[in-house]
Amino acid sequence: MAITIRLNSLAARLIAAAAVWTMLALAVGGFVLSNAFRQAALNNFDAALKTDMDGLIAAAQPDDSGGVVLQDRFVNREFDRVYSGLYYQIKPLAAGESGAQISRSLFDRSLTPTGEAKDGMLTHAYAQGPDNQRLRVLEQRVEFPNTATPDQNDTEVYTFLVAGDLSQVEAESRAFNGTLIWSFVLLGLGLVVAILLQVRIGLLPLRRLKDALHRIRDGRASRLEGEFPAEIAPLAAELNSLIEHSSEIVGRARTHVSNLAHFLKTPLSVLASEAEAERGPLADQVKKQVEVMRRQVDHYLTRARAAGSVSVLGNRTQMTPVLNDLARVLTRIHAARDIVIDAECPADLYFRGERQDLEEMAGNLMDNACKWARRRVRVRAVPDGTQLILTVEDDGPGLSADDRQRVGERGERLDESVPGSGLGLAIVRDISKLYAGFFTLEASDLGGLKTRLVLPLMPAS
Image (tube, rainbow, N blue to C red; front, side):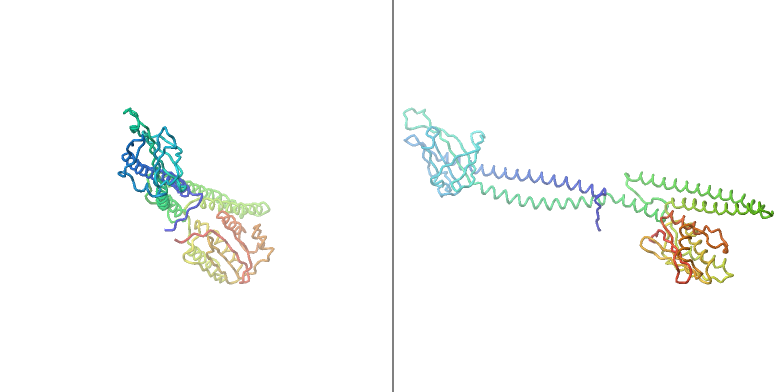
């Protein structure tokens, strides 16, 4: 399934918002987990240091000089290896640095804790090691009996300090953070893909609604069809009501237009008959004005009917039957002149509009060609992208470039010898404009006039 997202679409906004919040949540969650893991590793490290601290305290014994000595038991052997990363420092509180005992691993260095924080009897701190490494420090004060004085109640307070290299904790934290970053990146990408699919699937009913409206526009349906979710069903019902209401209004308007046409044509026919029965300038003037009124009524009623049909959704007309019917009728009308009408059109070509409008436009162009043709009229309808092109040619005398411009743009009638009202091309121009189309007049390779009408194309499927 190809997934395309427009930046200004609802899907893009939903996906972008969800992706941003997902990434923020993952970033915050990763930060919290990283800190939690580091704190847990540090707590484990502190627990190991506390074990070594307890071992030192258990191994410390007061001596006869008032100090303390360490027995071999309970003491971690890492204290004896130089720069091993595990160090201790024991000093009496009253004597200061001069009376301090240090582990062999410190060699000749001493530790100065910084950033001390009390935690019950323990003090947590940091220090710089003898090899410039960062150390974690635990301190605890312990009282021992002072055996150098006769008073048995005398005691001496000592500060026991144990420090360990934090490089192991840092290495574990880096390894965990690396795994965490890659895991969260993959998780984030998976969530974004899931969001994308969720939004696309969630918006499928809107796409079905759009396709249903497109089918109505194409004339393949008269109303919205199919089942829609509860959130969209009221919208679909309102659209169906609107379509039905629009069709009803257009239908009433057409009825009124048809009634008006009959109402006007009957009095005009009566006036024409009365004028025919009389002789004189008045009768001639009446006949002339009646003819003008007939032409104007036909012209504007045709425009009104075409405008009404354009506003109706779902109109489409197959080209081939219309052209074949027009060719058959016009061949009979001009049978005395042996006019041959050659009409070709693909069977799957559709006009995006009503059949009556297509018949009005194509019929006027073909009838005009038959009137001026000597023997042959050629009609072709072909698709061109989103448009269809209808060309009508004849082998008649044709028109000069200036005459074609006058007829095509201003609708002038150049020759009164051929019967007709002269409104055919004007009607074609007006109806084609209603469909966002147009027509041009050109020279035909048959020797006469070529009319090229461009109209909206309707896909067959």
